[in-house]
Image 1 (cartoon, rainbow, N blue to C red):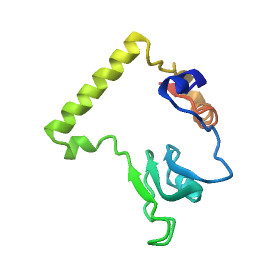
Image 2: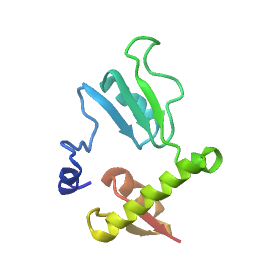
Image 3: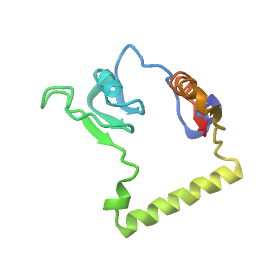
Length: 137
């Protein structure tokens, strides 16, 4: 997310690295449950953890203390558990995203290609740069 894209979305601050002090209402984690656990202490009471790549199985805090809410984004859940209304919403939202991309109101980052022999370089690039890497087979 560029600064310009963040401004268009109304985002006031984009953090590329974990902050050292807390006071946040919510955190979105796309690195995995261990990283998410490490970030939970940065949340305010009644805060929210949204896990994209693996959920936190056991709450970090003791019960009935800060009452952190744990959420997971299971992108494939609709296949097994979704109803017609949920599928219609998903398709509608997807069409809107495609229209936004086509009109230029939403910019999509071009991935960086890596040859299969450079798989480790691709993983390192993605981890450090926080950008999409595609391994070409």
